[in-house]
Length: 248
Image 1 (spheres, rainbow, N blue to C red):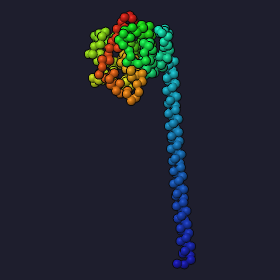
Image 2: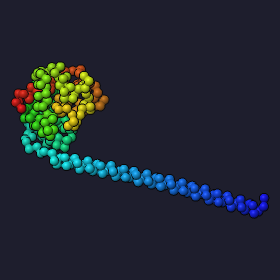
Image 3: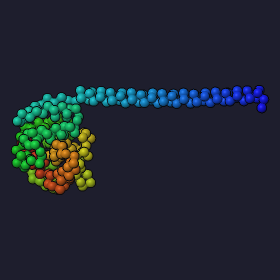
Image 4: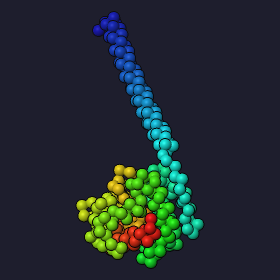
């Protein structure tokens, strides 16, 4: 091969190499561009999500502002403070309000756990506290939730002042605590105004769960306390009888 041919071949190789370098550079530029565009998309999505949260927060604040202000008395016996319950209900935090109701009712009864509550305790539950709890729930749910509403539903099913299993189970069906002939677990309740009338508060039935049993034992306690293995309806029936005595 002549020198001229070798030079021509070398120049061709250089040209091919330059083309390959340019191709690789173009590919790298495209990858960088793609990553940049992806980053821009992610930032855009993040900004949209942030904007949505701001709108939700604004809407929530507007709803709270528009919501009626409770002007009635929230006095309780034994120095019980109902301001936190009022605040939770005013903000539509139904699950937290349910837990707070359980805590307050135990405080009124001067008990630490719901298993310590006797029929006599329920039978002498202070009328002032029953009234305060009921009026707060009824007011902020626009008469959808509350102890008095639950009592009326129970009485409409011919439930007596003592535990009546059939009436109690029908009551559970009516207020949405049961489904397909079985009691729901606490986490399956509906903590919104979309729940059936009388769905909340769930304190007397689910109080032992609301109060925070250690996770290791929670399913066992809930099975025994709620899902039909014991006569869990007596506290609620007793409370309904007490509401009747209080003439609320």
